[in-house]
Image 1 (tube, rainbow, N blue to C red):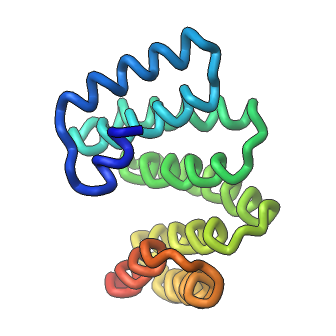
Image 2 (image 1 turned 60 degrees about the vertical axis):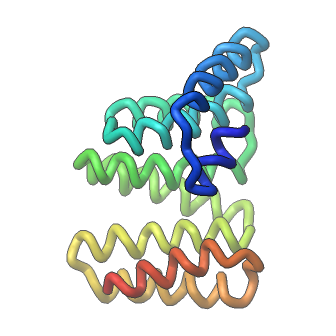
Amino acid sequence: MRLHVSVNAGDYRPELADELRVALDDYRQAGDRWGVAFALANAAELATLAGDLVGASAHAEEAVALLSQLGIPEDMVLFQVRLVELRWARGDRAGALAELAAARIGADRVGLAGLQAMVWRTAGDLARLSGDLITARSELDRAWTVAAERVPTPELRAGIATSHGHL
């Protein structure tokens, strides 16, 4: 947890990676699949920061697989969106789009505005990167409208605004 908070605050310290490895081992030994998934999500972030997209993807894939067993749809969508981004960055366009479709279904099923806006933002980013600016604008406008009206935290709106700026 300290690693998660520190990375989000821009205060990453290498010794926190050691704590993460210990925590991951402890969660595995205890059979705590949600704890393992959360630790793997953090390991994926560290691997991404180190430029290891293959390792990051492996961590994210395992985390998504664990969450699918646990039936926690809110977390599942969050982890799927991260997996979409990693697959796309590795050049696995088909895999990214397939995972995005699954995340979209999950977000709609859960019905939380923040999750839906996050998926729409990701869809907009991928459309832009594919050269489909009309779809990109549509997805990002949809994400912005929902986030501005129904999501109280500013981080998602800032991300959507950044994506809009890339158009």
